[in-house]
Amino acid sequence: MRTDLSGQYDVLILGAGASGIGAAIAASRKGARTILIEKYGFLGGLACSAEVGTICGLYTRGSHKTELAGNFANEFRERLERNGSTKMQNNETGLAYLPYEVYAFEDTARTLLKETSLDVLLHATGISISTNHDKASKKIEKINIISGNKTHVISASSFIDASGEAVLSKLAGAKLISSEEYQAPAFVVGINNLSESALSISEKDFNFVLLKELTSAENIGVLEKGTARVSLVPGSLKKRRCKLKLAYPFCRQDSDFEMTLIEDYGRSAALSTFFHLKNNLPLFKDAEIFSLAPQAGIRTGPRGKGLYTLKKAEVLEARKHDKGIANGLWPIEMWGAERKPLLEFFPENDYYQVPADCLISSDISNLFFSGRGISADEYALSSARVIGTSFSTGYASGYLAASSANKEGIDEAIINLRYIEGLS
Amino acid sequence: MNILIDFQHIENEITSFLKHEILDPSVIITPNDKLSVVGLQSLDLMELVFFIERKYQCKLPAELLREEVLFSINSIALFVSDFLVSDLSPSHIQAELNNEN
Image 1: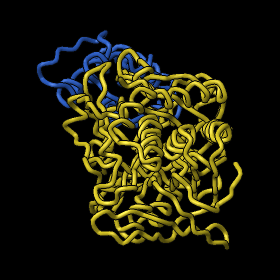
Image 2: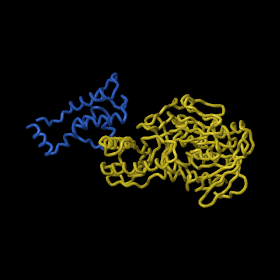
Image 3: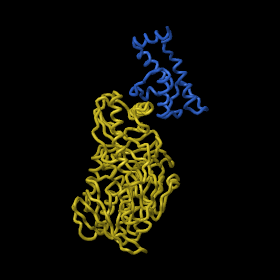
């Protein structure tokens, strides 16, 4: 991963989460001179920083077909299955997902990126951009990046906002989709040294233990209301170690101090919940916390407005598009302030498609979106944001951005992309 | 003196609670029916456990409430009656006797 920042890049990607990784691979494999910029010191975005723990959107509901997830998503899945010694798990509603260890996810991404010739800049974030000042056909020309105490000005032909928070779109003054409230976050805590009974308890029974004990504690006022929303991260119960996910009892608001409040709540709640379990359940008697996720798990937030916005009805109708560039396999999964998420399914073994226009900014012609930053309504996004689908929308954005930088026609690029991803 | 644990009583109380508080009135349930099949979710089972704890003045250890225990009304009643019997310490029995007199 050499970094030589001079000259003109074809494609610049802000964010090395699942979609940024897909975009970087696609653009680079297509021959574009590509740079991937990431604010953390590691790859994987929320998959690693929030320790999500499972990849959703890789399998259809029902007979768990993988071929519909797209070729890049499948390539990542196969590598991760080998690297991370993991395999598909499913639940009672027929939904399937792939549990993973954070280090294995990051390592899989790193290996894939190193097989290309793209440039990567970690611990770096965008601070401002400059445009061509052409109102009729606005384009981003350069971005100012800060990395440590150094600033760099990087020029590119195409830009991809894979930040998940519309960072690049906001800097560019692009039209956004935003609201006062987004979905509720989650927080992951790692616990080890559980008692011997952890070796023979099922995930379902473990979750019931948590539910009963924490709800009792809530009812008698020992723990705050809303605390009893804790469950095992599926696949994380290994020997005497596990990861627990705490669902927040409130939605994310769109305010300046929101992320600070969210982090403060998550970390405090994780500790008070853990100590209650330790003091009251034999299962946790000698347990210890071995990790708190580096950041709280954010599900949705502001994103760019595309030439088209994916809607709830299209997801539920499993609608296909001639210019569909990614398949969505996960149901609508809305996390609000209620105890359980709202799940809405499309038919088993079916899927919907994300049209290319959801990945292209409505007002900046060389700005592309991916992952949880695609142009979609809140319901559609609650499905399309999952890691598996983010790989696909990421790959698509990288391919389209590279084609655009190479002055290829968009329609032909879409046809080629659909072929490469196995969608047509 | 009435410290006999009446299994049938427990089974009837559980059935009555489920019929009146949890299940749709149209649902017919017998003691051996698999509870997940009649649509009972974790939250429903938790409410049932809380009801039993209030009714029989006990605390059922969460770690013992495995899937095979929460399988049917019959299996839950068996577990609860076994638990209540084993929960009877000499001081508990003396307290019951004191209450009776």
